[in-house]
Amino acid sequence: MELSEQNVKKQRPVHLDLQTIRFPATAIVSILHRVSGVIMLFAVGILIWLLNSSLASAESFAGVQSLFDHFIMKFIIWGILTALAFHLFGGLRHLVMDTGRWEELASGTVSAKAVFVLTVAFSIVAGIWVW
Image 1 (spheres, rainbow, N blue to C red):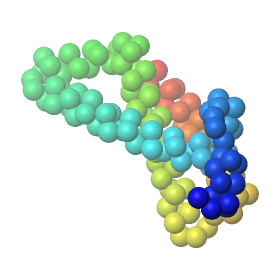
Image 2: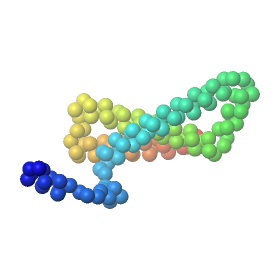
Image 3: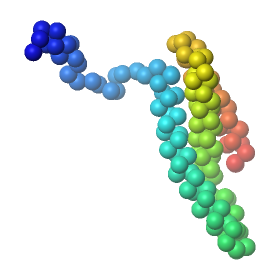
Image 4: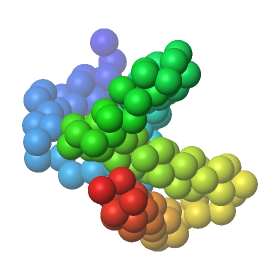
């Protein structure tokens, strides 16, 4: 083993404490964009099931409609709408970054914070609409 390889191995951290590492806003938006995509994958299944159940008969439509009176179903729909909004805003941010804009640290951080603000605003509006 060469001397430079030994120095590199000595400089590597032995233990990374993930609770003390602070991610920048850009990394958080990128990670949450992937998470919201997975949530949307499961949401499509829920929404298709609800659509299929509502189209089976008039009684099943009334049953699905009565589901929307429960807090849990309202919370699920609100969560789906919030995940959709975050995924949409984060995806638009990534598309703009693919064109070569917002790649600098300052503008990337501003766009990441804008995604959070827009999502919170949409989430509040969706919450008012659902409830």
